[in-house]
Image 1 (cartoon, protein in one colour):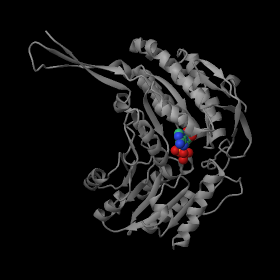
Image 2 (cartoon, rainbow, N blue to C red; image 1 turned 90 degrees about the vertical axis):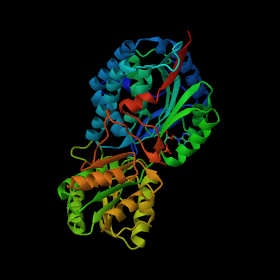
Image 3 (tube, rainbow, N blue to C red; image 1 turned 120 degrees about the vertical axis):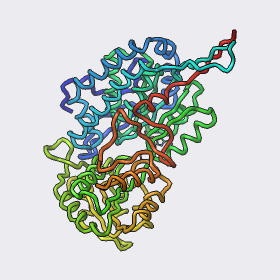
Image 4 (cartoon, rainbow, N blue to C red; image 1 turned 120 degrees about the horizontal axis):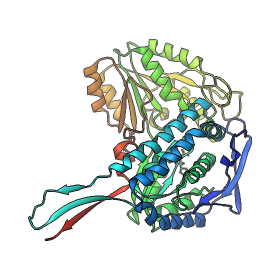
Length: 481
Ligand code: ADP
């Protein structure tokens, strides 16, 4: 790996300010080429426990700092990330597969949480409450919850960490992070830069291991963990929620989605296609807000499909480090095979593959960007999260009917509406049962706005003032006469 700063490539767990080895090893491979990038320490439940104990020991000192003292450290961390963006993006692309330009975008997006929460923590205002009794004075103060445990996925190896760790640290909490074992190198590089920025030992800890359930048990059930925050699949989220229940841990869950993308007959089709491509094929379709079901009004269906087809045909698939590549590989062979199975099942049920539909010769994890028409709501492709570069198109005729179909899912993360009619846009945006709705846009996530889902897509929000509130306890203080 050609890094400018070779010290950013770490291979150990980070506990109490020290890089720690482990008996076992995990291979980290480039999903594009299969090349071995690093052998990292395989952390155990005992390591996770040590990390929690270290975070608990660091908490009293960190929380006692003033907001501006914490902000100063976080701002240094933010700056160091920007200073090292080329190395961080390279690490990210090599372990995750996304094109370098997307990796850079993720680093900037991830860093923006650190800067924003460094600023926001100065505004942790409480209230003075008009009293119910003249002999009493009532106040609220906001205090950091304590040790925060985070489990993060491989699709955004940088930003899913900063989106949790930045508000937690800014609020005065200390953190233990368990990244996905597919993409630990970005997490390790973040810890290295956090240390250089001056985050005290124990404030930020990272443990990665092949036995995720064993680490998860510790992070959800250790008595010294105050809050658990997870991004990943709904299936795993449900297991972790159940584990959190025994200790009544506070928790936030960012889980799966089944995003509808609705194109009305009054949409600007070029806008709709470029939004569709952005939400569908970014990260090869491996994002929780990726479009999963495309509903197009029957009167513009053929024109939309033609434009989508043309846009997809222009995509360049390849290694994320190669010039001009817009779509990389899937994370592993299992993911590519799952996508292939979905395509053959969907085609077998009568849908038509308009473009793509197969593995690619670039490597075993590559699958072609694919457009499928004639899909129906009963098909598995319309009910399950695809997590791959498949764009399944359905027709609709009636606004109320398409809203009903769009809402007919246990998921409620993101939805997209394409319409130039402001009254319709307002109506439909309000009627969709989703945590986030984008109108005439495909990429909407930003530091300053709350990200999160309803129904089985999650609990809590990340980003914006809501994302900070997750890491405070509001204490009511009553002073008698
Ligand atoms: P994905 O499909 O994106 O891999 P997962 O929900 O399987 O989503 O994984 C997200 C994160 O959850 C990863 O860090 C993974 O290691 C972790 N994980 C998976 N299963 C468990 C589990 N049973 N307990 C704790 N963590 C888990």
